[in-house]
Amino acid sequence: MRCPYCESDLTRVIDTSHDTRGSVRRRRECQDCRQRFTTYERAVLSTPLVIKQDGAREEFDREKLLSGIRIACAKRPVSAAHIDRMVGEIESRLQAMGKSEVSSRVVGDMVIAGLKELDLIAYIRYAIVYLGLDDLRAIRDEINRILEA
Ligand SMILES: [Zn+2]
Image (cartoon, rainbow, N blue to C red; front, side, top):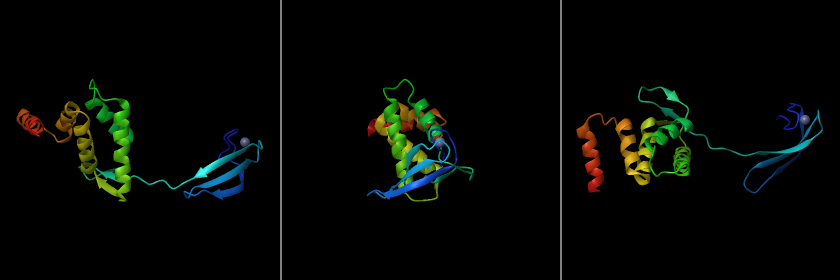
């Protein structure tokens, strides 16, 4: 653990305690500048790797997901906070699945479902790219489905 005051690597644990939620709190002292500071250790759920359509695996990329959704939401009445929350929820749900890998489809489906609730225009924009709605008829069918629902 690096000292937050002088960035020295020489720090010493002088006290360790546990809190009720299972976190570990350590009181440390820097051997160089003698400043004391506290660190907390807690378990963090890991996000599964995403299996892309071509079979390649990649780390879940929160920024990439955010930017794709932001583009779909451009000039729509959807706040950055809404988009952030949606991506946060997607990430939590992926972690809660407890898997080491998930298909990119699973992630895409969650975005689709989230956008459908948030803003239908943004949903259509995202769906055109994600579902590969590459002809006007398929797009019209999807819009009709929404309008009828
Ligand atoms: Zn120090």
